[in-house]
Image 1 (cartoon, helix red, strand yellow):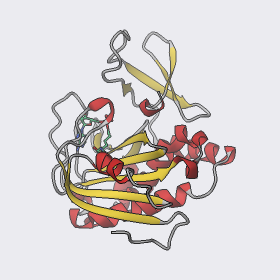
Image 2 (cartoon, helix red, strand yellow; image 1 turned 90 degrees about the vertical axis):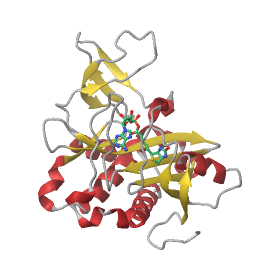
Image 3 (cartoon, helix red, strand yellow; image 1 turned 45 degrees about the horizontal axis):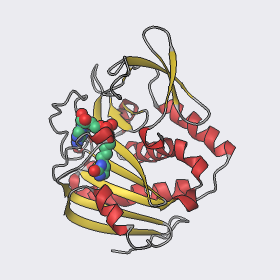
Image 4 (cartoon, helix red, strand yellow; image 1 turned 120 degrees about the vertical axis):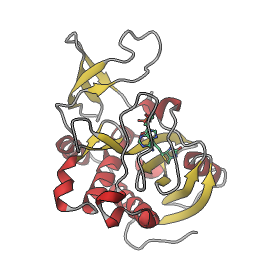
Amino acid sequence: MGQHSAFSLLPIAAHHLDTVASTMDAAKEILKQPPPAGLVYVTARVQTAGRGTQGRVWQSPPGNLYMTCVVSLEALSEARLPTLPLEAGLVLHRLIVSRLPFEARPALWLKWPNDLLLQTGPVATKVAGMLIEVHRGHVLVGLGVNLAEGPEIDDGGRPAAGLAELSDALHPEKRLDIAEAFASGLAETLSPSWSTEKRRETIKAWSRITRWNEPVKLRGRSPGIPQADATVMPLQLTEQGHLEVRHADGRHETLVAEYLW
Ligand code: BT5
């Protein structure tokens, strides 16, 4: 509890919990009191109601990593929000890559806006997901990383995989180590003030790590949209970090992460 890291400009405080409904809710509990300045994060061993975007379930058995980082929007600037998932994704990608054996590294890539995928066969498996929410003037960055196991996916999502079998550095025993490294990496990335140049660098770096030739499936969009489950081709990130895609009929659309709606 309340340990501080000397490695980043934003001070870091951690709360390690055992069983929670969701670390997003645990983080919101913490926000009922004014939190300390800097980055606060919560981890849990197990979640009983872990969630993804649009109310989807995030399966959360023991042995995987579940955490939520909280940073005040004041410290960030609102202009940074659209690119925040990209920045967080880059931190996550860098962290996991650094713990993978050299030969496995090229298989790891980021899918817009919040998935970390591992390409070991024709279908990439999902090894981590991020969920961003804004609450009481703070941004909450939730992260789930499959270490021990990739649970059975039965809701139409892509298959999941665990990372532990690839590297001892991604063993479930390293869970809190990985959490701390993610929090420090995020604090380090977010500490310098935001600039147009930083935004361009982020978009460039992220664009190198995604796979532009992999179609994106739009799952369960609002009813009434004809292409509710359309498969689209990603084209490029806009200057704001939104994703421009091409539909099968040639029409272009710019996708905006759900927490910005
Ligand atoms: C995400 O949503 O990928 C965001 C997941 C964020 C989870 C973290 S855990 C800590 C924090 N506390 C929470 O309650 N949440 C955050 P989305 O892109 O909507 O993906 C959800 C989909 O991924 C589901 O519909 C399933 O198909 C699939 N899925 C569920 N559990 C999974 C798992 N453990 N590993 C891989 N895929 C999973």
